[in-house]
Length: 332
Image (cartoon, rainbow, N blue to C red; front, side, top):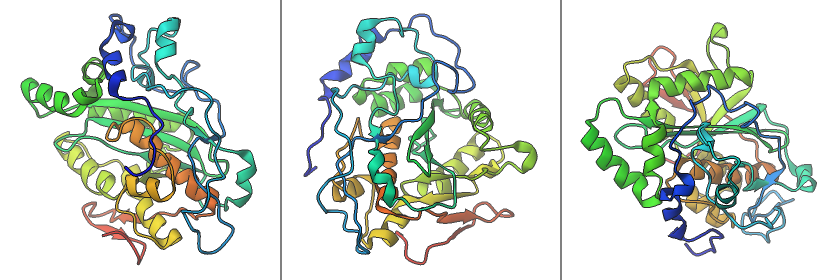
């Protein structure tokens, strides 16, 4: 990349394999991350370098003025903690080595909220799935549309249902071994059906979803970087898992389309948007929880610039394979 990346080098990879993250006695995964040990105190989020524009041009390359600069060194997330399975919260060495606060890289200056527009939604659920054959990772960040605060997060590793153990091992080694988190994946991954059961409990506890009211999201919408996650992959995975597509996956926001219409510039992906907005990458690209945080940083920047973030795609309720794209100008 052409811009600096303020993060640790890959020497930290071996840390995930070390005894400091060896959880020989794992706790059961709670149904929700809103428990006292996991609930996030709403935080003003945004460490990234970006800019606000008072003009109609919305120039994303203007001088950076928006974000707080973290005084603490970057640390990788404890991926046992994100799934409610960290047993080392009283281990000082472990706490020094790994981050246990998902909002840490997302702090925003309160003074910059004066440019934010009133949104049609109360919350954005930033989602970035990982896994090409089957879904391997399901991370979601809940962002307050008015304040840009990170309210909570949901993160699960997903175990494929139609792959042999040998193929799974090869798949995970190739996907997560390079990040040094393959062991965490094997320790924590659960089937997709169980992930969605736990996700629905999490949604309900935040009053974002009620099965009895039709099962659609309440004043919230998923935000993705592209249409692949919800248009293609979730539908495929539901078929593989022999389950009906949940109604909360019927519409979503493709941030690339909103970006195109707001800044009048095409961005083919997350890295392009971050480069143009001068937002440094946090964590590892293609590690789902880190990509979700980086997409959230782009979303926060756009909200601070005054973007109206609206639904961009909606499925046909009678034929979920058919999707209507609501923006005339969109990334194809």
